[in-house]
Image (cartoon, rainbow, N blue to C red; front, side, top):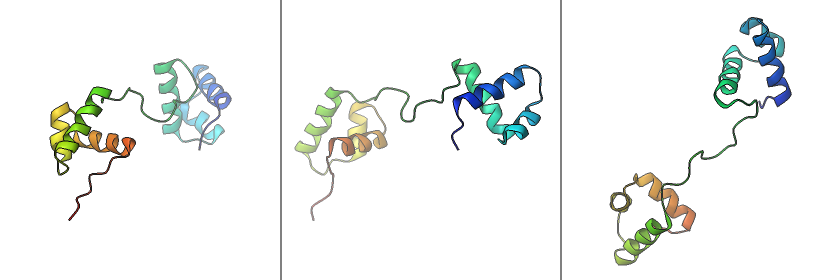
Length: 110
């Protein structure tokens, strides 16, 4: 359940006034853990707005790395994700996700 920003503000204000977290959680029908997370979020980020979904950091793979990966595949179609990851210093799962983004498949043709 997504809690509206105004409700988050009212819950935090109630706790700041000195009401127990358990009582506020019961009144607003949320879990204590959820309320504690909302309070923690407010103190860390200074806002009641939830974080946007998706990666919070920029991608680790650069366009130059893309070129390296594609060149490795062209040179040896049987190249492994592990080998590509080692070549550009990232984990093989990062390479796999990047290949999916680029629309490249490493299927073997037997």
